[in-house]
Structures are given as structure tokens and as C-alpha cells.
Image (tube, rainbow, N blue to C red):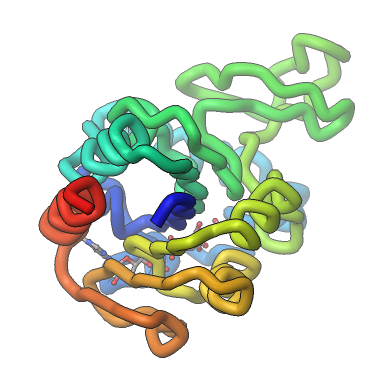
Length: 230
Ligand code: OAD
């Protein structure tokens, strides 16, 4: 299994204390995603959207990586082939566990984006719409998060990696949101073996060659041990 592509979702950070979206008590049971995760919602009420992401940035700052994040960082370090982590998560727990080959396809809480000129910079702990862009000076500051209706980042790179993958593994994602939910079929059609590691079977569980169900902190370190023992 030389080339491994790993897709992670909110489930990998659940045991670090960060909420998932669609589980019982998940973020989308408490907030309307149309209000806080769309460009239209931001245009209607930027303060509400900033409050939502400021709260999530604060949660993230208090959280620590868990055994699943550390196991993936170890895989990246010790596997003889290539490992690419594609995450839908906007937290930085993969990086804080030591991983470096990480693509944040849905953006990052720790980055800010100017909606006027496209400039990006490191987000302060608390962001406000009135904050001026350091490049153009306009007050069009938004979190660098990919909202519904926007294009995920680095899709060309991701598609290339899926096309070349020997093994595709999805961890802690419900398979609800495209294009990520289609990665398993894309990788499988190009010849990869496919494995799901998640608490409950995802909506695309039957698309995988194999599915293992349990918590990320149990399943992921055990799976990494298996791969490194090969
Ligand atoms: P979801 O909340 O949709 O799914 C979380 C998945 O993690 C579920 O399948 C759970 O069974 C699983 N899970 C929960 N706890 C777990 C644990 N301890 N160990 C392993 N698995 C666990 O989250 P995502 O699939 O990441 O996008 O959601 C995808 C996208 O939808 C997010 O990136 C976000 C959201 O709307 C945007 O905001 C653009």
C-alpha cells in the first residue's frame, strides 16, 4: 500500500471535545447552517457568523489532539510510501499532532480571508466584520472557511492523489457533503482499496471494500499499527 490518501471528518476530533455536525447534539442540530455556513447568511448577518466561528476557534484553542491524530502523524512519518491527509475539518489538530501533509479542503479557523481582495492572513482569536484587511484596508473580513455553495480548496491536487492512491481511508465522516462524499467512489474506480473507520456506518458505507466501526481513538491507532507492520 504505497500511496495512502486519508479523508478525515468531524468524528476524528470528537474525542478531543470538538462537536460533530450531524450527530445527536451536533452543531447542525443547534444552528441553521443557512445562517452560519453560507455566503448568503454572512451577507445577512456577518456578526452572527463571526460569533459562531469565534466560538469554534476558542473551542479549538482549548482542545488537544487525540490518539487518532497522533497515529496519523506517526503514519506520515514512518510509512515508506506517500501519505496525504485531506481533512474536512477546520481545526488544526492534525498539525498540532505533528502531521504536515494536510489539505484543509473546507478551509481553516486559524486563517482570515478578505472577501474584497482575496488576501489571507492569520486570524486573531476574535474576528469582526469591521476588521480592516491588512492588504487593501477594506472592512470585508471573513473566516477562511469554505461555505455551502463555494468550491472546496485544492481539488485538483486531491483528484490527482485519489487517482494515484493504492489505499483510500475515510475516518469520522458521515458521507453527507460532496465532493468529499464522492472520494471513495473516485478512488475505487481508479483501483484503490477503500476502508471506512467511523463510529456509525456512513451514508456511503457500502461503497467501501471494508468498514470498521468504533471510536477513532480505538480504530485509527490499531489500523496504523497494521499498516506499519506490513
Ligand atoms: P458529520 O457530523 O456529518 O459526521 C461525523 C461522523 O463522525 C459521523 O459519521 C459519526 O458517526 C462519526 N463519529 C462521531 N464520533 C466519532 C468518534 N469518536 N470516532 C469516530 N467517528 C465518530 O461530520 P463531517 O462528515 O465531517 O462542512 O461533515 C462534513 C462537512 O459537513 C463538514 O466539513 C462541514 C459540515 O457541514 C462545512 O461546514 C462546509
